[in-house]
Image 1: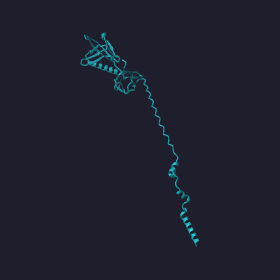
Image 2 (image 1 turned 30 degrees about the horizontal axis):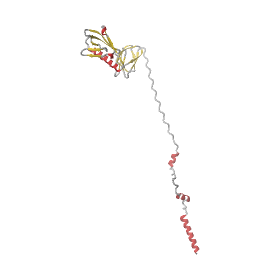
Image 3 (image 1 turned 60 degrees about the vertical axis):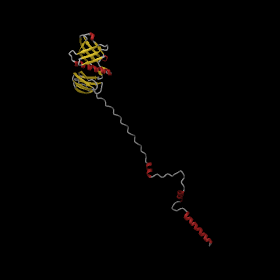
Image 4 (image 1 turned 90 degrees about the vertical axis):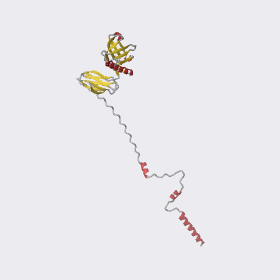
Length: 260
């Protein structure tokens, strides 16, 4: 009887062990062991990449198209050839040494230099040109059939003046002619002792007294002349003095003297 009781207790203990301590049949023993095993220090298992990330990594990379090369600058157009003159008329090609000069022929506007004037009848014509800040140019020009090049130089000092005057001495007077060019001023008279020729910038005095109708000129050596108009016209003395003084001022600034 005792033996039966001991065997029954052993059987009951084995049954308890089997129910509570054996692994669950729904979960494999390997999975349970893995989940219960501590993770190795310092090594974390990477999480699996989501499907979208894997798709992006698998997609091939496209190379950027090279930038288009800049277009080459267009070459400047060649200047148009000069027109051929008519065999019966003249053609003037007019240029100036300053920009923006306006050109007129016989008071008709031709254009801004450089400019070409075509179909000009042969003969003498009046050529005028003006540029801001410079004295105007006025000159007759002879036109013949064919082409002619004309260069107008505003930077040159032009002066071509002459007036009749009377030089009054201490006793008496002499009559003569005052002539002014870029090369200088001279007095021509029959009295040889009064003849002189001096550079414009060498004059010590060059003054006009309009009320007294007198033009006073003092030479570098100190001799002084007092000129009056033979007809008592102070306007001619005033204009002569004004134009000569303008030329003197330009020469002081460094402009080159033009031809006589």
